Length: 578
Image (cartoon, rainbow, N blue to C red; front, side, top):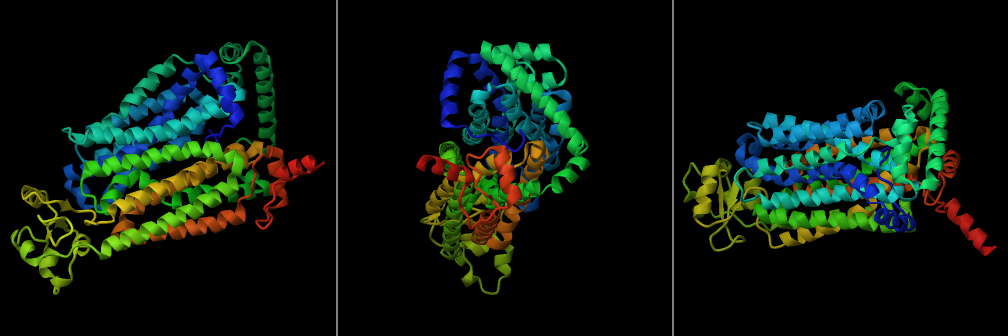
């Protein structure tokens, strides 16, 4: 889909319920294709928990932050390639064939990850899975949109968005279920292939998109499918609408060209499209630079940074954040048409900044109040088990848990309690086992903290601040702000900008944590969010309730951020007063 999921109105949901109950075929079609959204969400969430156990199996992954970042972010790199090729596949092979192809690639990627004997094989699996996700992320909603009755199209497309958040939630449940199972992360990543198999089988029983078939000159096949989807008195009207749309597309190809270069040149020479891109790309890049995907990709790791050492506890708490993301998606559907796109993004960003600044304070406090190192206790483990940086330090009395972790060592908490002085030891499996034999807790990512739970609570509030506004609105904005003839190229540029920003953030997060600390990293994201707030205020107009033609006129005229009026709203007020 060009630009992301649509958001349905209240009327669409009422009509949706009526149609869905009277025609289960429509729901089967939407849910089957929507599994692509579930795959997207599952892959986003599953790696966050699996990474904790991958580090245990591969020493080089545990020791090299850049390798952890590569394993996480290569799926994003694959998705960029998949999304780029997905447009060609959709036009050439069809929507259904593209979804089937995405399922095959995703399944192969899941198998490769599950049996990976070395990190580099795991990276290949991540790229394959990402490639499948990239194709599915744009094809599934497009297929649903083109094979849905116009009256409930928005509501049906929302199923794809809901399944993305459900996939994330499901991934945390699966992660939690396999924490005590031999092979842990292999099961977590391998299970991802099952939904792909289910979708593949279901899609074999479903037809091709009627819009694509009509575009290929197969009007009779298209009509037969429409007769299953639409009421009898609506079929001819939809055929007529498709005929007019195809003719319009041919006319537009003559105006703006057929090659990518010609379309790009025509887009950037149009003032309305340029201003639309300023707004659309800004919103998409800001969406990633508030740091959301660091939370989705590294959520359990962040919880451990807050001083919660247990992997299963970290995964359980991460499950809460994923659930809140789903709640936020529902809130977005309820609020976006009531409060508008611009206002929802600005309110969301203000709340995000407050949460990030609070997280900065919480992590800073946790770092400064970290338990000190007990020299006698540390040396009792022997010179070979003691952190070498600690042994060579001139002033060990100033060392605490945080300084120990920054030296790439680990903290073995006291038997009397996690917040008492403990030992600074070498971070190896053997030493960790010795620490565990003494019934002591091992901390290698974050230090024991009495306010760790507060960090998790604020993390949840951050998700609630993000999801209804910056989570959904940038996609909706990009589906509305470009003139019809440039919607494909405009939405494509914005989507690639989003994926690239996602790649940058996910590829650098752990390195930033290592260089700046958790507090400094969240402060940096707060700074990015502030810049995003200012730029969105200056560049993004309110287009709530406007027709596409009215949006184009607004962009041609130019947007004044000090003039917060909406032409559509003003017109409605004027007609009411008259």
